[in-house]
Length: 263
Image (cartoon, rainbow, N blue to C red; front, side, top):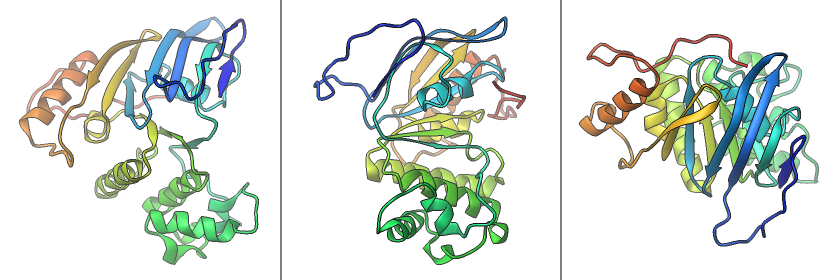
């Protein structure tokens, strides 16, 4: 699916071309009043690639993700993404008056909606909680329901907007493993916005840094999986990203950026 943003004219390439990209964004610009957040961003993502998008708060990471997900139509440039795109947000955004499986199935059509929803819950290890109300779920469980809601639509592109930021450390590690396994099993193309450099190195095939409205750096993460955060190679990747993000590295440096409001 090609989205022609305001002021753009482009000819489509064949969808089945051998060199086809899962995501092809060219010259993406976004302004809020007098403030230009994105200044001609070019981003290409290969099919099946897991990309981590990092940057200081206010750099436009979430804005770019919304544009790729078709949730922001005020940008300029060209965006080509698959037809089936799902987004998982930082907050689960569950409907409190609907049971877990109905939250997963929300918006779906067809005779097998319930079965599809419960199968998606099974994928995230929550089939046994299919009939629970959202208020009875833990934070990690609610986020897994939200992930199941994204997966049930059988996306070719999964956009993750800091979905683990509000979780405790242990739950976050478990969710990282779950996301990595699901994306590998399904062959999903995924883009993760995160402030957590360790999370980026743990999950991504490639990490990119957004700065001054453009993609300033990229780092292939060519480490064997599962990845060991205590390993020397992991630490080298961590330090490289932290350096690009303007964070001094030391034995006591944390691998997360300070959080602020992000457009």
